[in-house]
Amino acid sequence: MKCRITMEIEPSGPFEEYGFYIRSDAKADKGYKFNFSAHNKIVSLGNADMKAVDGLDKTIKIDLILNDDIVDMDINNKRCIVNRMTEQKGDYFWLYAKHGNIKFKSIKISPLL
Image (cartoon, rainbow, N blue to C red; front, side):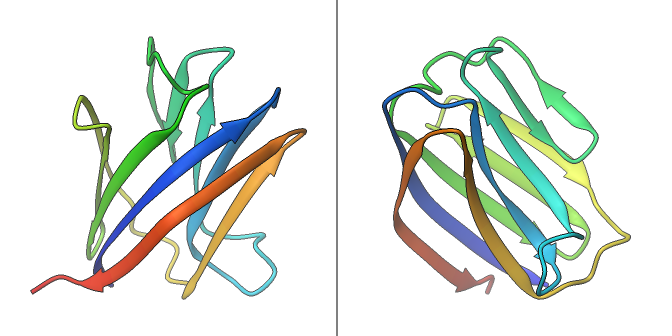
């Protein structure tokens, strides 16, 4: 899978975490989890963590590149996390919020040229 996903994520009120899954199945119990925790200031991408990430309790802009098994995610043009993900090959993209309200806006999915 080769594509680019861009979006804005806007928390409203208290929450525990939010994020999304890529390459998931129809039941969202497989795939790769992208997790944002404002309280812990951590962004997780599969088995990689990025710590001391400020501003996750405010609107953030995500630019995600999927180039076969390489995943590269940019947050607000300030922080970047990259990982290699080879096992999951699902076709679903799931969004989630845990114990709170999150708006996922301006979602755009486009092929890599």
